[in-house]
Amino acid sequence: MEEKDLDKAQEQKKGETGEEKAEQKKRSWLRELLSFVEIFVAAFILAQVMVHFVLINAEVPSESMESLIEPGDRLFGFRLAYAFEEPERYDIVIFRYPVDESQNFIKRIIGLPGEVVEIRSGKIYIDGSDIPLEESYLPEEWTDDNDGYVFDVPNDCYLMLGDNRNISLDARFWASQAIQDGLAEDMEQAEKYTYVNEDQILGRAIFKYYPKIQMLD
Image (cartoon, rainbow, N blue to C red):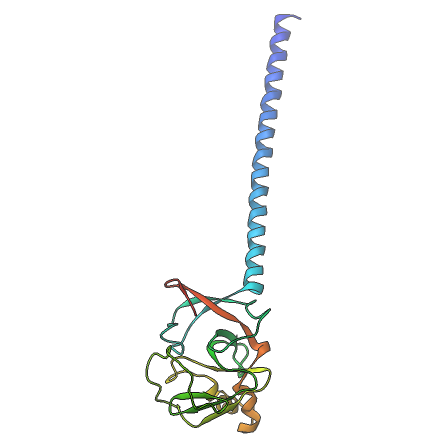
């Protein structure tokens, strides 16, 4: 082979090698891009599963659960908390507001299914007991709307009250609110709005993550 032909062959080989390197580089970039897309899609699906089936992300707008939960606090609730066990007294739960299920409320469970709950002079008595519930979590003395209430909790329902009882919109007032909103004509019809059905409970509040991290017991 003449020297001229040899040089031409070498140049052609170098060109082919350069094209192969460029093609390999392109393929490597595409693999990295596809890998990133796969990670992003997997993370998005996982986030959707967590939000819709595992966790509830909530921001608290009111003062009804002070001082444990303040306005503006952000927290997570666990949707599966009651998948294998029943809600217990004192649990802090997120639920659909019986009077308007488009709203989510957060309160504390006070009355369990089938119990008779009485409020007398700022104390709560269960099933005629002479000993009131211990409620060390109340932020201040309970003075407003603290007497004369008797709740006969249905078997599939729970009675919810806020911790900050002097301002909390809770079970004491929901029947009246239902009448005001035109959902019932009288207190007898409105009584069902007083209680939270087990199907309306979305999950148990477990911890705050903003403005600070704190477990909710």
